[in-house]
Image (tube, rainbow, N blue to C red):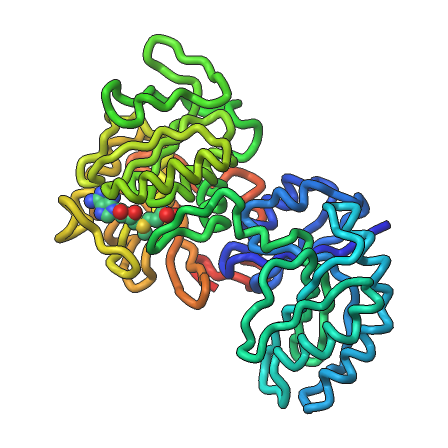
Length: 420
Ligand SMILES: C[S@@+](CC[C@H](N)C(=O)[O-])C[C@H]1O[C@@H](n2cnc3c(N)ncnc32)[C@H](O)[C@@H]1O
């Protein structure tokens, strides 16, 4: 049996998600569209689908209908059509991938583009009521104010795009971006799939350690020194065979935790000025089962020895959701100036910056070369994701697979060299 999977992704990072899909599921051929990666798989159930980390949400496609209009009677007509679909079979199919109760409580989530004479709530409630019996479930409707009905076992997704309606079932109980580990959070915390994409961009994909340059161990006595390298990788004469990944504005630990998942053999470090955020990070990492060395430090004075950090992955406070504090209260320049010093020549930096800032220029003046700048849109906000290397590095940008997916996205007009 072949099924079609729709993966929703951050705008601008479709090519990164396609690379993850193609690496995790080598038999599939992802297709790219704005905010979406679609593919067929003949292997069902495929548990790797629920482990995708750069994907926001993933769905099993149930049916597609063309000729959906914009008039008030559309919800009733769509509901009548949906009620004829073989919902019990689709529910059982999903039940092969993950547990689905015999009589699931389900909700319906619709998205509509363009102007229509009905709203999404009318469509959701009409379709939900119409399919409950066929699905053998209990429809959890929104309340009068449109509030969601709380946790459900199953979500039916309706995507109305122009004249087309796509009907799908969410693969997980909740969206993939909602990580079970991430319960302790503060202001400006990062979207986990973006953190996972940063880790993919700044780190090699293949086998975790093979072919990596040697990185030196962190300095004794600094917060990170307590972080034993995970995966038991070898260390000889103060030189470690594993990459060292660090986030000097780690907040609740999202980037550090996602980097730890992406590179199981790496030593991962996170520092922040705020003890409350560090407590969150430790809580979250504990729930994720990841060993990460967290410690308190002002990013104006990076607590790592010269050349000790293979990759710095971070989203600094750009005065939008969170203000910089400590020695950075006036300007982030001391951090940017210190950054090249902690990297070896083959080091990498991935930064999320506010799009208003001229990040490439700012970094170039501090001795970092921007290898790649990708504009992204997340919850309506535009940011830049920059991949940088020390200015004297001979390095080019991306490892093979990722580079090929970026080329495809560029050739197809989905992205431009720095935007979309
Ligand atoms: C945008 S948040 C980072 C969020 C983080 N990526 C996450 O997912 O939770 C910026 C962080 O910078 C920290 N910060 C502000 N000034 C700092 C400084 N001088 N040195 C280190 N951290 C600082 C704040 O405490 C905050 O946690």
